[in-house]
Image (tube, rainbow, N blue to C red; front, side, top):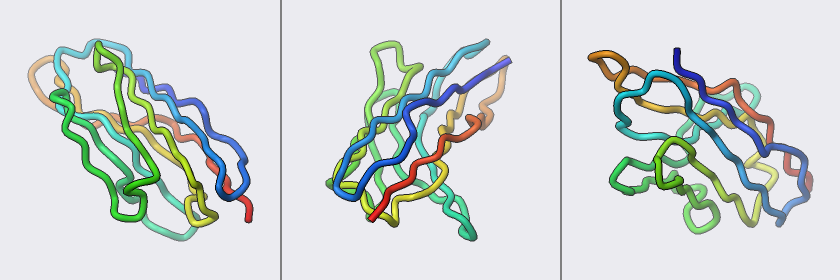
Length: 119
């Protein structure tokens, strides 16, 4: 059983900052990458940022220069530092991990954490 537990969401004013955390646990034999996605009301889920086990990062154009993804040394906890937040960043943020479990890589998702940015 693999679990992803997110924390750190909340309400913040425009221009403010939040830091999200996501901790993975369970029978994980390997990690391809972990990342953050978000879904605003009435919109499709979209990529925010990802980080591979080698440390390669990828960001959506809309968050480049404002958000930073990082991970701990073990690679099982990822963070998303969000600065200069805008009202359009309001969404439910989901953590995703692509993990080797038994003999295959599978996608795993957290339960989501709400981020609300007021103008």
